[in-house]
Length: 432
Ligand code: ASP
Image (cartoon, rainbow, N blue to C red; front, side, top):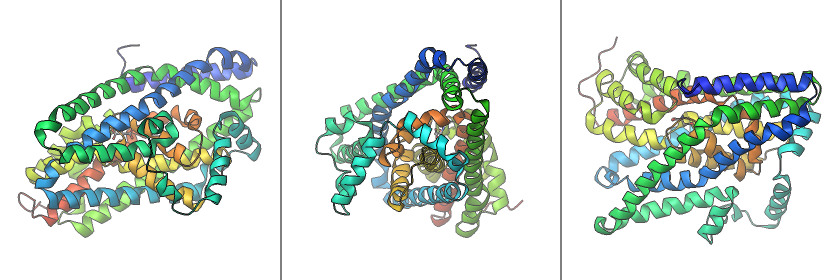
Protein backbone atom coordinates (compact mmCIF):
# COMPACT_ATOMS: atom_id res chain seq x y z
CA UNK A 1 0.00 0.00 0.00
CA UNK A 2 2.94 2.31 0.83
CA UNK A 3 4.28 2.50 -2.69
CA UNK A 4 1.03 3.62 -4.25
CA UNK A 5 0.72 7.37 -4.83
CA UNK A 6 -1.20 9.23 -2.15
CA UNK A 7 -4.23 10.00 -4.30
CA UNK A 8 -4.62 6.32 -5.17
CA UNK A 9 -4.41 5.43 -1.48
CA UNK A 10 -7.03 8.07 -0.68
CA UNK A 11 -9.28 6.62 -3.38
CA UNK A 12 -8.79 3.14 -1.92
CA UNK A 13 -9.62 4.60 1.51
CA UNK A 14 -12.81 6.04 0.03
CA UNK A 15 -13.69 2.67 -1.48
CA UNK A 16 -13.14 0.80 1.79
CA UNK A 17 -15.09 3.50 3.65
CA UNK A 18 -18.00 3.03 1.25
CA UNK A 19 -17.94 -0.73 1.76
CA UNK A 20 -17.75 -0.46 5.56
CA UNK A 21 -20.51 2.16 5.55
CA UNK A 22 -22.76 -0.01 3.36
CA UNK A 23 -22.14 -3.05 5.55
CA UNK A 24 -22.86 -0.91 8.62
CA UNK A 25 -26.19 0.14 7.19
CA UNK A 26 -27.10 -3.35 5.96
CA UNK A 27 -26.29 -5.04 9.26
CA UNK A 28 -27.51 -2.17 11.45
CA UNK A 29 -24.05 -1.65 12.94
CA UNK A 30 -24.17 2.12 13.22
CA UNK A 31 -23.36 1.97 16.96
CA UNK A 32 -20.24 -0.07 16.29
CA UNK A 33 -19.09 2.29 13.56
CA UNK A 34 -19.65 5.35 15.75
CA UNK A 35 -17.66 3.81 18.60
CA UNK A 36 -14.85 2.08 16.73
CA UNK A 37 -14.41 3.62 13.29
CA UNK A 38 -15.55 7.23 13.53
CA UNK A 39 -12.88 8.25 16.08
CA UNK A 40 -10.19 7.70 13.43
CA UNK A 41 -11.98 10.24 11.25
CA UNK A 42 -12.32 12.65 14.16
CA UNK A 43 -8.59 12.37 14.71
CA UNK A 44 -8.05 13.32 11.06
CA UNK A 45 -10.26 16.39 11.37
CA UNK A 46 -8.53 17.37 14.60
CA UNK A 47 -5.13 17.04 12.91
CA UNK A 48 -6.26 19.33 10.10
CA UNK A 49 -7.57 21.88 12.58
CA UNK A 50 -4.40 21.53 14.63
CA UNK A 51 -2.09 22.57 11.82
CA UNK A 52 -4.32 25.34 10.44
CA UNK A 53 -3.07 28.17 12.68
CA UNK A 54 0.65 27.31 12.55
CA UNK A 55 0.32 26.87 8.77
CA UNK A 56 -1.27 30.28 8.27
CA UNK A 57 1.15 31.98 10.63
CA UNK A 58 4.33 30.55 9.14
CA UNK A 59 3.26 30.69 5.50
CA UNK A 60 2.00 34.28 5.68
CA UNK A 61 4.91 35.68 7.67
CA UNK A 62 7.49 34.06 5.44
CA UNK A 63 5.44 34.89 2.30
CA UNK A 64 5.11 38.59 3.16
CA UNK A 65 8.69 38.96 4.31
CA UNK A 66 9.95 37.36 1.10
CA UNK A 67 8.35 40.16 -0.89
CA UNK A 68 11.54 42.19 -0.56
CA UNK A 69 11.69 42.50 -4.32
CA UNK A 70 8.53 44.50 -4.26
CA UNK A 71 10.39 47.58 -3.12
CA UNK A 72 12.68 47.22 -6.14
CA UNK A 73 10.00 46.23 -8.53
CA UNK A 74 7.33 48.28 -6.87
CA UNK A 75 5.45 49.06 -10.06
CA UNK A 76 5.36 45.47 -11.30
CA UNK A 77 4.75 44.31 -7.75
CA UNK A 78 1.80 46.64 -7.27
CA UNK A 79 0.25 45.62 -10.59
CA UNK A 80 0.77 41.94 -9.87
CA UNK A 81 -0.76 42.11 -6.40
CA UNK A 82 -3.74 44.13 -7.66
CA UNK A 83 -4.38 41.64 -10.47
CA UNK A 84 -4.05 38.70 -8.10
CA UNK A 85 -6.57 40.27 -5.78
CA UNK A 86 -9.02 41.17 -8.55
CA UNK A 87 -8.94 37.70 -10.12
CA UNK A 88 -9.38 36.03 -6.72
CA UNK A 89 -12.38 38.16 -5.78
CA UNK A 90 -13.85 37.55 -9.25
CA UNK A 91 -13.34 33.80 -8.85
CA UNK A 92 -15.06 33.76 -5.46
CA UNK A 93 -17.95 35.78 -6.84
CA UNK A 94 -18.39 33.27 -9.67
CA UNK A 95 -18.35 30.41 -7.16
CA UNK A 96 -20.93 32.19 -5.01
CA UNK A 97 -23.21 32.82 -7.99
CA UNK A 98 -23.10 29.15 -8.98
CA UNK A 99 -23.59 27.75 -5.48
CA UNK A 100 -26.39 30.17 -4.62
CA UNK A 101 -28.14 29.36 -7.89
CA UNK A 102 -27.72 25.58 -7.89
CA UNK A 103 -28.06 25.26 -4.09
CA UNK A 104 -26.48 21.79 -3.82
CA UNK A 105 -27.19 21.61 -0.08
CA UNK A 106 -30.91 21.85 -0.74
CA UNK A 107 -30.76 18.46 -2.42
CA UNK A 108 -30.99 17.21 1.16
CA UNK A 109 -34.43 17.16 2.71
CA UNK A 110 -35.30 19.64 5.47
CA UNK A 111 -35.34 16.84 8.06
CA UNK A 112 -31.91 15.67 6.97
CA UNK A 113 -30.54 19.22 7.19
CA UNK A 114 -31.87 19.57 10.72
CA UNK A 115 -30.45 16.23 11.69
CA UNK A 116 -27.01 17.06 10.20
CA UNK A 117 -26.91 20.43 11.89
CA UNK A 118 -27.74 18.86 15.24
CA UNK A 119 -25.14 16.20 14.73
CA UNK A 120 -22.29 18.36 13.48
CA UNK A 121 -23.05 21.97 14.25
CA UNK A 122 -21.43 22.21 17.64
CA UNK A 123 -20.95 25.90 16.99
CA UNK A 124 -24.64 26.52 16.45
CA UNK A 125 -25.03 28.10 19.85
CA UNK A 126 -22.04 30.32 19.30
CA UNK A 127 -23.68 31.50 16.13
CA UNK A 128 -26.84 32.49 17.97
CA UNK A 129 -24.75 34.45 20.48
CA UNK A 130 -22.83 36.02 17.59
CA UNK A 131 -26.05 37.03 15.89
CA UNK A 132 -27.30 38.59 19.11
CA UNK A 133 -24.01 40.42 19.56
CA UNK A 134 -24.19 41.67 16.00
CA UNK A 135 -27.64 43.16 16.42
CA UNK A 136 -26.45 44.91 19.57
CA UNK A 137 -23.21 46.23 18.10
CA UNK A 138 -22.53 48.83 15.42
CA UNK A 139 -21.85 48.18 11.73
CA UNK A 140 -18.08 48.46 12.14
CA UNK A 141 -17.89 45.72 14.74
CA UNK A 142 -16.86 43.22 12.03
CA UNK A 143 -13.79 45.33 11.29
CA UNK A 144 -13.05 45.83 14.99
CA UNK A 145 -13.20 42.06 15.46
CA UNK A 146 -10.39 41.54 12.97
CA UNK A 147 -7.93 43.30 15.28
CA UNK A 148 -7.06 41.07 18.24
CA UNK A 149 -6.22 42.49 21.64
CA UNK A 150 -4.07 39.50 22.48
CA UNK A 151 -2.30 37.26 19.99
CA UNK A 152 -2.33 34.21 22.23
CA UNK A 153 -6.03 34.63 22.85
CA UNK A 154 -6.58 34.90 19.09
CA UNK A 155 -4.45 31.86 18.30
CA UNK A 156 -6.20 29.81 20.96
CA UNK A 157 -9.50 29.66 19.10
CA UNK A 158 -9.79 28.46 15.50
CA UNK A 159 -12.73 30.80 14.95
CA UNK A 160 -10.38 33.77 15.35
CA UNK A 161 -8.23 32.84 12.39
CA UNK A 162 -8.81 36.22 10.76
CA UNK A 163 -7.15 37.85 13.76
CA UNK A 164 -4.18 35.56 13.38
CA UNK A 165 -3.95 36.48 9.69
CA UNK A 166 -4.05 40.16 10.62
CA UNK A 167 -1.19 39.69 13.06
CA UNK A 168 0.84 37.59 10.61
CA UNK A 169 0.57 40.19 7.84
CA UNK A 170 1.49 43.03 10.25
CA UNK A 171 4.41 41.02 11.55
CA UNK A 172 5.58 40.17 8.02
CA UNK A 173 5.48 43.84 6.98
CA UNK A 174 7.40 44.89 10.11
CA UNK A 175 9.96 42.21 9.35
CA UNK A 176 10.29 43.58 5.84
CA UNK A 177 10.90 47.08 7.18
CA UNK A 178 13.53 46.09 9.75
CA UNK A 179 17.21 46.35 8.69
CA UNK A 180 18.40 43.05 7.31
CA UNK A 181 21.13 42.61 9.89
CA UNK A 182 18.53 42.36 12.64
CA UNK A 183 15.69 40.74 10.74
CA UNK A 184 17.63 38.00 8.97
CA UNK A 185 17.67 35.45 11.82
CA UNK A 186 13.94 35.93 12.40
CA UNK A 187 13.22 35.63 8.70
CA UNK A 188 15.28 32.47 8.43
CA UNK A 189 13.45 31.16 11.48
CA UNK A 190 10.06 31.65 9.83
CA UNK A 191 11.30 30.28 6.50
CA UNK A 192 12.49 27.19 8.35
CA UNK A 193 9.28 26.99 10.36
CA UNK A 194 7.34 27.17 7.12
CA UNK A 195 9.26 24.21 5.72
CA UNK A 196 8.64 22.23 8.90
CA UNK A 197 4.92 22.96 8.84
CA UNK A 198 4.78 21.80 5.22
CA UNK A 199 6.32 18.54 6.39
CA UNK A 200 3.61 18.37 9.03
CA UNK A 201 0.98 18.78 6.34
CA UNK A 202 2.70 15.97 4.51
CA UNK A 203 2.54 13.75 7.58
CA UNK A 204 -1.11 14.49 8.19
CA UNK A 205 -1.92 13.73 4.56
CA UNK A 206 -0.23 10.35 4.87
CA UNK A 207 -2.91 9.55 7.38
CA UNK A 208 -5.59 10.84 4.99
CA UNK A 209 -6.55 7.44 3.49
CA UNK A 210 -7.48 6.10 6.94
CA UNK A 211 -9.13 9.36 7.96
CA UNK A 212 -11.16 9.47 4.76
CA UNK A 213 -12.16 5.82 5.11
CA UNK A 214 -13.40 6.37 8.69
CA UNK A 215 -15.16 9.63 7.86
CA UNK A 216 -16.96 8.18 4.87
CA UNK A 217 -18.10 5.07 6.72
CA UNK A 218 -19.26 7.13 9.71
CA UNK A 219 -20.92 9.70 7.47
CA UNK A 220 -22.94 6.98 5.75
CA UNK A 221 -24.18 5.30 8.91
CA UNK A 222 -24.69 8.64 10.68
CA UNK A 223 -26.82 9.92 7.86
CA UNK A 224 -28.60 6.77 6.84
CA UNK A 225 -29.20 5.14 10.19
CA UNK A 226 -30.76 1.94 9.02
CA UNK A 227 -32.24 3.30 5.82
CA UNK A 228 -29.97 3.05 2.73
CA UNK A 229 -32.13 5.48 0.75
CA UNK A 230 -30.98 8.26 3.03
CA UNK A 231 -27.32 7.62 2.19
CA UNK A 232 -28.21 7.94 -1.48
CA UNK A 233 -29.74 11.31 -0.71
CA UNK A 234 -26.44 12.51 0.74
CA UNK A 235 -24.40 11.18 -2.15
CA UNK A 236 -26.79 12.89 -4.55
CA UNK A 237 -26.17 16.19 -2.78
CA UNK A 238 -22.41 15.60 -2.78
CA UNK A 239 -22.56 14.88 -6.51
CA UNK A 240 -24.38 18.15 -7.18
CA UNK A 241 -21.87 19.97 -4.95
CA UNK A 242 -18.96 18.54 -6.97
CA UNK A 243 -20.63 19.54 -10.22
CA UNK A 244 -21.11 23.07 -8.82
CA UNK A 245 -17.39 23.33 -7.98
CA UNK A 246 -16.42 21.97 -11.41
CA UNK A 247 -18.78 24.32 -13.27
CA UNK A 248 -17.38 27.36 -11.42
CA UNK A 249 -13.80 26.24 -12.13
CA UNK A 250 -14.67 25.64 -15.78
CA UNK A 251 -16.23 29.11 -16.07
CA UNK A 252 -12.96 30.58 -14.89
CA UNK A 253 -10.72 28.59 -17.25
CA UNK A 254 -12.96 28.57 -20.30
CA UNK A 255 -14.57 32.02 -20.13
CA UNK A 256 -12.92 34.48 -17.73
CA UNK A 257 -9.26 33.73 -18.46
CA UNK A 258 -9.58 33.61 -22.28
CA UNK A 259 -11.54 36.87 -22.10
CA UNK A 260 -8.83 38.48 -19.96
CA UNK A 261 -6.14 37.26 -22.37
CA UNK A 262 -8.08 38.65 -25.30
CA UNK A 263 -8.84 42.00 -23.72
CA UNK A 264 -5.68 42.74 -21.80
CA UNK A 265 -2.81 40.99 -23.56
CA UNK A 266 -1.22 40.91 -26.96
CA UNK A 267 -1.28 37.10 -26.98
CA UNK A 268 -3.68 35.19 -29.21
CA UNK A 269 -6.02 33.15 -26.98
CA UNK A 270 -5.13 29.97 -28.83
CA UNK A 271 -1.41 30.47 -28.24
CA UNK A 272 -2.08 31.04 -24.57
CA UNK A 273 -4.27 27.96 -24.13
CA UNK A 274 -1.83 25.76 -26.00
CA UNK A 275 1.16 27.22 -24.19
CA UNK A 276 -0.22 26.76 -20.70
CA UNK A 277 -1.48 23.19 -21.22
CA UNK A 278 1.62 21.37 -19.88
CA UNK A 279 1.39 23.34 -16.62
CA UNK A 280 -2.30 22.50 -16.36
CA UNK A 281 -1.65 18.80 -16.80
CA UNK A 282 1.13 18.94 -14.23
CA UNK A 283 -1.14 20.84 -11.80
CA UNK A 284 -3.85 18.23 -12.25
CA UNK A 285 -1.56 15.30 -11.63
CA UNK A 286 0.42 16.73 -8.70
CA UNK A 287 -2.35 18.78 -7.02
CA UNK A 288 0.33 21.26 -6.09
CA UNK A 289 1.04 24.68 -7.57
CA UNK A 290 4.46 24.61 -5.90
CA UNK A 291 5.42 21.31 -7.51
CA UNK A 292 4.13 22.63 -10.83
CA UNK A 293 6.05 25.93 -10.63
CA UNK A 294 9.06 24.87 -12.74
CA UNK A 295 6.72 23.72 -15.52
CA UNK A 296 4.61 26.88 -15.23
CA UNK A 297 7.74 28.99 -15.59
CA UNK A 298 8.93 27.03 -18.57
CA UNK A 299 5.53 27.37 -20.26
CA UNK A 300 5.53 31.12 -19.64
CA UNK A 301 9.07 31.65 -20.89
CA UNK A 302 9.30 29.16 -23.76
CA UNK A 303 5.73 28.92 -25.02
CA UNK A 304 4.44 32.40 -24.26
CA UNK A 305 7.83 34.12 -24.51
CA UNK A 306 7.37 36.12 -21.34
CA UNK A 307 10.67 37.69 -20.27
CA UNK A 308 12.46 36.00 -17.42
CA UNK A 309 12.50 39.19 -15.30
CA UNK A 310 8.71 39.15 -15.21
CA UNK A 311 7.99 35.44 -14.99
CA UNK A 312 10.55 34.84 -12.26
CA UNK A 313 8.88 37.42 -10.08
CA UNK A 314 5.19 37.04 -10.91
CA UNK A 315 4.93 33.24 -11.05
CA UNK A 316 6.59 32.15 -7.77
CA UNK A 317 4.62 34.86 -5.97
CA UNK A 318 1.45 33.65 -7.70
CA UNK A 319 2.09 30.02 -6.82
CA UNK A 320 2.24 31.07 -3.18
CA UNK A 321 -0.53 33.62 -2.87
CA UNK A 322 -2.76 33.52 -5.94
CA UNK A 323 -5.16 30.61 -5.87
CA UNK A 324 -8.31 31.35 -7.82
CA UNK A 325 -9.33 27.68 -7.92
CA UNK A 326 -8.84 27.26 -4.20
CA UNK A 327 -10.87 30.37 -3.47
CA UNK A 328 -13.72 29.15 -5.70
CA UNK A 329 -13.66 25.83 -3.90
CA UNK A 330 -13.76 27.52 -0.50
CA UNK A 331 -16.72 29.72 -1.41
CA UNK A 332 -18.75 26.85 -2.86
CA UNK A 333 -17.85 24.48 -0.01
CA UNK A 334 -18.66 26.97 2.75
CA UNK A 335 -22.07 27.75 1.29
CA UNK A 336 -22.77 24.07 0.58
CA UNK A 337 -21.99 23.06 4.16
CA UNK A 338 -24.14 25.92 5.49
CA UNK A 339 -26.98 24.80 3.21
CA UNK A 340 -26.58 21.19 4.29
CA UNK A 341 -26.92 22.33 7.89
CA UNK A 342 -30.00 24.35 6.99
CA UNK A 343 -28.24 27.60 7.90
CA UNK A 344 -29.34 30.69 6.01
CA UNK A 345 -26.49 32.94 4.98
CA UNK A 346 -27.13 36.68 4.98
CA UNK A 347 -25.59 39.12 2.52
CA UNK A 348 -23.10 40.03 5.25
CA UNK A 349 -22.14 36.34 5.50
CA UNK A 350 -21.58 36.17 1.74
CA UNK A 351 -19.39 39.28 1.89
CA UNK A 352 -17.53 37.69 4.76
CA UNK A 353 -16.94 34.66 2.52
CA UNK A 354 -15.43 36.92 -0.15
CA UNK A 355 -13.10 38.45 2.43
CA UNK A 356 -12.09 35.27 4.22
CA UNK A 357 -11.85 33.05 1.13
CA UNK A 358 -9.52 35.65 -0.39
CA UNK A 359 -7.35 35.68 2.72
CA UNK A 360 -7.38 31.96 3.26
CA UNK A 361 -6.55 31.20 -0.36
CA UNK A 362 -3.60 33.58 0.04
CA UNK A 363 -2.65 31.76 3.23
CA UNK A 364 -3.05 28.29 1.74
CA UNK A 365 0.23 26.63 0.90
CA UNK A 366 0.70 25.46 -2.68
CA UNK A 367 0.54 21.79 -1.75
CA UNK A 368 -2.21 19.15 -1.97
CA UNK A 369 -5.19 19.67 0.32
CA UNK A 370 -3.93 22.97 1.74
CA UNK A 371 -7.16 24.63 0.68
CA UNK A 372 -9.16 22.12 2.65
CA UNK A 373 -7.28 23.03 5.81
CA UNK A 374 -7.68 26.77 5.44
CA UNK A 375 -11.39 26.29 4.71
CA UNK A 376 -11.68 26.15 8.49
CA UNK A 377 -11.15 29.93 8.46
CA UNK A 378 -14.07 30.60 6.16
CA UNK A 379 -16.36 28.25 8.07
CA UNK A 380 -15.38 29.83 11.38
CA UNK A 381 -15.98 33.34 10.10
CA UNK A 382 -19.56 32.62 9.05
CA UNK A 383 -20.34 30.56 12.12
CA UNK A 384 -20.57 27.18 10.42
CA UNK A 385 -19.16 24.29 12.42
CA UNK A 386 -15.79 23.11 11.06
CA UNK A 387 -17.07 19.57 11.66
CA UNK A 388 -18.89 20.19 8.38
CA UNK A 389 -15.58 19.39 6.69
CA UNK A 390 -16.51 15.77 7.31
CA UNK A 391 -19.16 16.11 4.63
CA UNK A 392 -16.76 17.02 1.84
CA UNK A 393 -13.35 15.65 2.83
CA UNK A 394 -13.90 12.28 1.26
CA UNK A 395 -14.34 13.68 -2.22
CA UNK A 396 -11.76 16.44 -1.94
CA UNK A 397 -8.88 14.91 -3.83
CA UNK A 398 -10.33 14.97 -7.35
CA UNK A 399 -11.62 18.49 -6.74
CA UNK A 400 -8.17 19.52 -5.48
CA UNK A 401 -6.63 18.26 -8.72
CA UNK A 402 -9.08 20.38 -10.73
CA UNK A 403 -8.71 23.53 -8.64
CA UNK A 404 -4.94 23.35 -8.96
CA UNK A 405 -5.37 23.60 -12.77
CA UNK A 406 -7.17 26.89 -12.21
CA UNK A 407 -4.53 28.07 -9.71
CA UNK A 408 -1.65 27.67 -12.15
CA UNK A 409 -3.62 29.03 -15.11
CA UNK A 410 -4.54 32.15 -13.11
CA UNK A 411 -0.89 32.84 -12.34
CA UNK A 412 0.02 32.57 -16.00
CA UNK A 413 -2.84 34.88 -17.04
CA UNK A 414 -1.59 37.57 -14.65
CA UNK A 415 1.99 37.09 -15.85
CA UNK A 416 0.79 37.60 -19.45
CA UNK A 417 -1.14 40.76 -18.56
CA UNK A 418 1.82 42.20 -16.65
CA UNK A 419 4.16 41.27 -19.51
CA UNK A 420 1.91 43.03 -22.02
CA UNK A 421 1.82 46.23 -19.99
CA UNK A 422 5.57 46.16 -19.34
CA UNK A 423 6.68 45.30 -22.84
CA UNK A 424 7.80 42.04 -21.33
CA UNK A 425 7.67 39.58 -24.23
CA UNK A 426 10.88 38.30 -25.80
CA UNK A 427 9.39 38.82 -29.22
CA UNK A 428 5.78 38.90 -30.38
CA UNK A 429 4.29 35.44 -29.99
CA UNK A 430 3.43 33.89 -33.30
CA UNK A 431 -0.24 33.20 -33.79
CA UNK A 432 -0.81 29.51 -34.53
N1 ASP B 1 -3.59 22.03 -4.13
C1 ASP B 1 -3.73 23.44 -4.29
C2 ASP B 1 -2.49 24.03 -4.91
O1 ASP B 1 -1.41 23.60 -4.65
C3 ASP B 1 -4.04 24.14 -3.01
C4 ASP B 1 -5.38 23.68 -2.51
O2 ASP B 1 -6.39 24.26 -2.93
O3 ASP B 1 -5.45 22.73 -1.75
O4 ASP B 1 -2.56 24.96 -5.66
